[in-house]
Image (cartoon, rainbow, N blue to C red; front, side, top):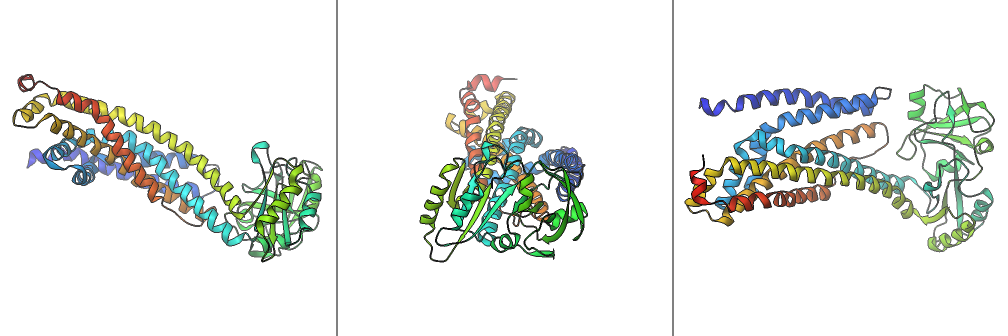
Length: 460
C-alpha cells in the first residue's frame, strides 16, 4: 500500500497549492470586473494568471477521475482499455500534455460564454425596449461618429412626413468630448432633439429628476455614470465639446442603466452646434400599427439615397448589426483555438512517441501474446483521444466558469442582463478535440504497430 500511496503525495501537495491559487484568482477576476478604477486591468490579469496556474497544478490530481470517466466512453474492448490505462499511468505527464489544449479551450470557452450572453442580452433588450420598427444606421467603418458622417435633419424631416410614421428619434454623437475634466462616459455622449420622445421610444425608466425636453445647458445621464462620477440632480458639470470651449451643463434627469443605456450621457439638440458636424448618426423610426414596414423602409431608403454611408432596415437588421460585432470577435478567438489545437497536436504527438519508445518491450510482449497491429493502433489512438478530450473538458470547465464570472460582473454593471451557455459550441469543441486526438495518434500508432516483435521483446 505504501508503494501505491507515495506517487500520490506530491499530487496532493500540488492540488493544495493549485486550489490556493485558483480560488483567490477567480475572486480577483470578479472583483476586477465589478469594480472601477486604475487597478482593474492589473487585477484582471493577475486573477486570470492565478486561475490558469492553479488549474494547471490541480490537473494531475484530476487526471484519474476525469480521464478515467472519458476512458469509459472511448475505451471499448481490450485495446481501448489498455489505451486508457496507459493515459492514466502517468497523470502528471498526461496533464502537462493536455495543458496547451486546456489553455486554448479555456480562452475560447470563456469568450463563447461572453459572446452568447451578449447576443442574448442584445436580442432581449432590443425586442423589449426599442419601440421602433425601422432603424437608420451609418457605416461605422467610415470614421468615428462625430457628426461629420451620417444624415441631415432635412432628410429626417422628410422621413417624419411619410404616411404611417409616428415618431422619429435621431442620435447625434460626440465621442471626443471632455466631461468634468475626463473623457466622455464609456457608452458615449449623445444629443437628441426631444428626450421625452426618446424616453417613450426606448422605455427609459426615470430614476431621479425628469426625462423631458432638454433646454440649453441641461443634460441627463444613466444611474451608473451619475454614481461613478459623484453627480447629483441640479448640479452643473463642465462639458467641453469640439467647438465653443468648456461650458456648464446642469443635470436634470437620471435614467435607469440598461445594456443600451449604460455609462451614457444625453445633451440637448442645441449642443449639436458645438459638435464636429451636424449630422445624425442613427435614427429610430416608430410607425403606426398596420403600416407596411417593408414599404416604409423602401421609401426611407429613397430619401437617404444622398447619404451613401447610411443604411435602412427593420429591427432585425439592428440585431444583425450588433450580433455581427460579437461574431467577428468570436471568429478571432476561434483562430486562437486553431493555433492551440496545432500546438496540442504536436505536444500529444511528442508524448506518444516518447511513450512508445519507453514501452518498446511492453509493446513486443503484447504483440507476442496476441494483440495484432490494428489493436496496437487502436490502443495508441485511445490514449491520444483520452489526453485530448481531458484537456478540452478541463478547458471548458475553467472557461465556462470564468465566462460566467465575467458575465455576472458585467450584469452588475448593467452591460448584460443574463448569462447564456453556448452548449452547441461546447459540444463542437469536444468533437474537435476527439478529431485532434485521432490525428495526433496516427504517426505514433503507425510506428508502434510496425515494431519488430522479437527485437522489441529483447529491447532493454
